[in-house]
Amino acid sequence: MTKPLEEMRDGQSIELLKELHILTRDGKINQDSRRKLKQVYHLYGFVEPLLKDLQASGADLNLVDHGSGKSYLGFIIYDLFYKSLAGGHVYGIETRDELVKRSIELQKKFGFENMSFLNISVAESVQARQLPAKIDIVTALHACDTATDDAIEFALARDAKHICLVPCCQAEVAKTLKQNKAKQLASPMAEVWRHPIHTREFGSHLTNVLRCLRLEASGYKVTVTELVGHEHSMKNELIVATKIEGPRKRIGDRLDYILNELGLQELQKRFAPAVRADLN
View 1 (cartoon, rainbow, N blue to C red):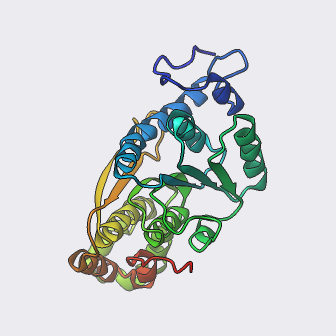
View 2: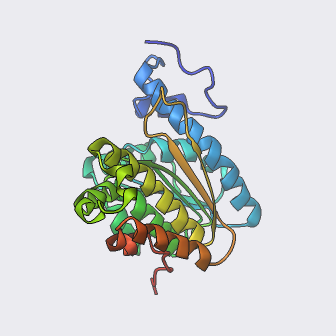
View 3: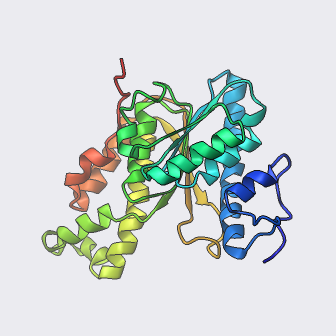
């Protein structure tokens, strides 16, 4: 065991970190938990200024965390930012019933009144009426494979102002590239993903490129950066998007071109700019 992070944020509840099993009962932390907490703190460092921007604009401060798991991110965001607010709400979306029940127990124990957890999939959340029609900020930390795309679908459908994503295990595009490889071998471009390891790596990279183009085509300003160093996590790409304008056809055309050029037309629906959900 080692000592807790020297960078522990002001106002952070030690008891909450113990209940999340990030800290031990005697307040110490092991190396694995240190990595987890550092990732969450780094992501919070990106989320906090977005929350302050929303607060200054008078927004409702509704935040949805997709694929919340044990809700490290949601609880720490609430503890550091929402706890002192009169309003705002944090929602956690998770399919594993036991994790949802545990999160609800902790929410009640710490008196986090403006916090809720739903036992539904990210895909189901797009039309879920338990959530407000307008969501201000959407987060997804390591939502696996297409769950990240579903989180984007949700954000677009609920007209989110800000989106923070750390994608994980992107397999769909690589699978489609592999399935269509025989058709594409006549093109020299197929050499980019001809070998299986390149199919996987190129497919993962391409997935995030397409996600960024989808967001830009939907009117978002997109920034892509590292979350933390690779010594902490190999799934390290952070996508931050902020809505600044309406749909941009030129970007949508570029997205379509890439899909057509690489034989991925069947994924057109997956990456098409979305419209707001009709929840009336």
